Image (cartoon, rainbow, N blue to C red; front, side, top):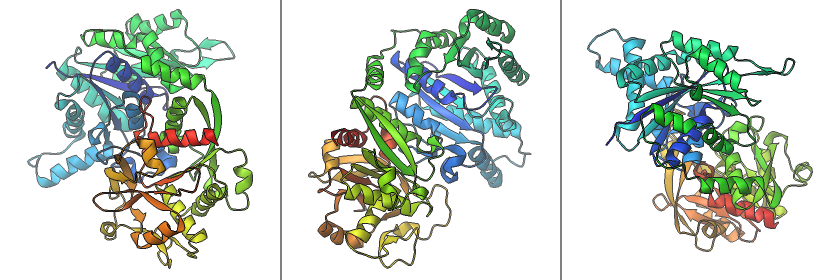
Length: 534
């Protein structure tokens, strides 16, 4: 088998330019040409993983099938490529240093002085190569987090420099994404920030092979020529990335700019056939030409930052396109919601989703949202904590178990309808100690969920500690809330439904993580259809 090729994507001038979207778009084009591609994210923060980070700090924490808590960019990778990622696809500085320090404590370095070079950079290079070591991929794209010039990113940049020297330029190339700001006062696009960013890379020993210029205005060819001249890059390796209406248009724009062709030429790989993007284009056509418009309320406590619920927002886009429907999402802060103002806040809403989360803040607002959906027969989807809030609300207001709660929020409650898993009770560490990753679930064949999936056995990703308390199961069944899905090994309740309701489903897992452009999640598809029918 041919040697694995490596592509590194760096960013300059400013953060949040869209390295993840660019990486995913390039990977999509290469995949559509018949190459096997995966993407890896190297994050420069010292947290071991994003699992303990507040969503306001870093957006949502994305969970892989094998149970890794990772950066939200891995969600983009999966949504674009329709291929699951794993623990190896996200590496942090914290994990790198943790590994090196553990080796030093064991004596692996035979008493040598442990330094950033070569020990930290060697570990970074090892992690980069792990992804391609199984020979399952033709191309590995590695996104370097942060911005060139950041102190935190220096060890990663140095590792890339070493790899280029070790592998040779035909096996390893660098794409630098940078900003060309537009000054409306003079009507000019300015290239100086890009020149300085490339100079910074050159000072670290890296000459970028391709420059992608992020811009709000289409660039004149003279601007591209100027950048090519000043940055030592071929003219056809200067690519424009203008703002588009949806990130799912970026692959088509990069196709027009011939980014994939330039990459294959520089890596000495065959061009093969033109990318097969028929289904992708069909998705975009439906997305841009909806036959229906609905409004769905997303009730959560991190709503000020849309990235905190990135996978849910994208799952709405996928399911909306499938149903030829535009889904307008109304973000409602659970701390500002109660029984008194629920009718006003949900006045023009066609469906309610109560989002996942941790901690006591905003819980009563989420419970009020569940109550309003249940009493007014509005399609309802509760995810993880959202499902638990549905269980609590039903216990209080239907089963009349006064003060029923989760022991996460009230460890003295007389009715602990949500309780800590037995194996979790002795755990004090927060990081990576929950029920994480994919678990099987057997569906009730009479349930709404079964109709959505069309099969009895499913496998979905989890990220939680607390569970439905089986002690109260018979009470719920008698009261009209049924267990629609059960874990076959632990017998834990994974899904609850109210059959008398138009569409009322709560799931302990996170269906949003599995939704992709070409495979929208069946629960979201069914939920959106119920909202349209309403």
